[in-house]
Image 1 (cartoon, rainbow, N blue to C red):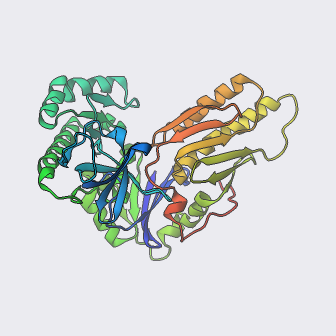
Image 2 (cartoon, helix red, strand yellow):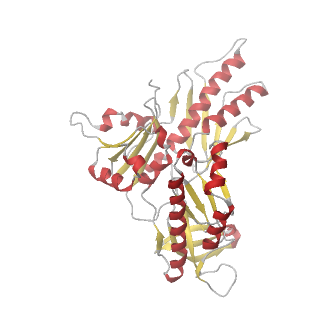
Image 3 (cartoon, helix red, strand yellow):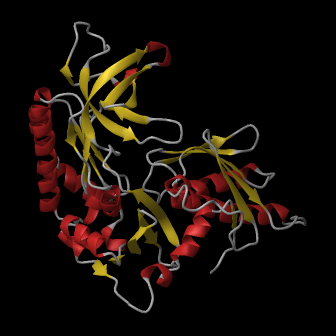
Length: 409
């Protein structure tokens, strides 16, 4: 895989290319000094709306976020009124859990997290979680040598109730690197909690690195061939941020004859990722519709399918469509509720095969994807964790979605 980063239309364009040269992920990040996903700050409660089960917290002058009341099991107040319940004027530590999306403002949480390359430190957790993608032998070694009960108890003595999740990237990482990251995350959270009570409202306690930088760490290093940029400023930022094992893959593109954008056909990849219709190898196609409420994907065959082997032929098209749905969802950063209308089949076993294949196809997505069920209307319901806005909104005003996109091998 290759990771390409360039300045594009006032944004920073990041493209992860697969081994076949097609884009796996595309992101277009705005250059902003405002709060972003993962930032931690002190907010002031502006209004408690018990009827909606939430309160509205001002995190900067004129900027408010939505904080669910059921998220207030153990809030960390820096200034508290007389009522034991949350009330207007209270000040507390919050973290951005979802950025503003369409007409919806940002979402906040009091369940603080700090993430690294290998670990996720959760102040709402109580124990150890290890990625299921890590082999069992390695999981046992991590429990015995790095995350013994004694180690976890020492963390709790320093931070209070907390937990650790071990990411997939830890499978082949040196133990010393993981141990050092645990110390860094624990120390950073401890310092944050110590200083917060002495800070006024709207203070930003922790700023996450720019998304385009931090996102690189979500790619498994062993699968990443190189990181390329043709922008000197971006190259220097990458040099400063990347750890040694990724920095050795960093290259500066400087061919005067042809731009990096053209070498890797990024205009074509963007066009494909923004179109409404996606044609597949078999001749069938997907039609993708995005609304505020949900995403719908309609699978259409190229022609009517008849004959003795109709069920088998339809299943084959649906299996191809399942793979392409998983790819498009990740590529476009689609999230929330997703409904897929596959071509109708007669046999339950066919649907069982399709559902298993869809689950396997989405398993490589770094975001949590759940293949929920087959509805009474024959639609497959999926959900994908909503964190960032979809690609077409990231590029809004720079490129509109087109109607068609042809499959190009």
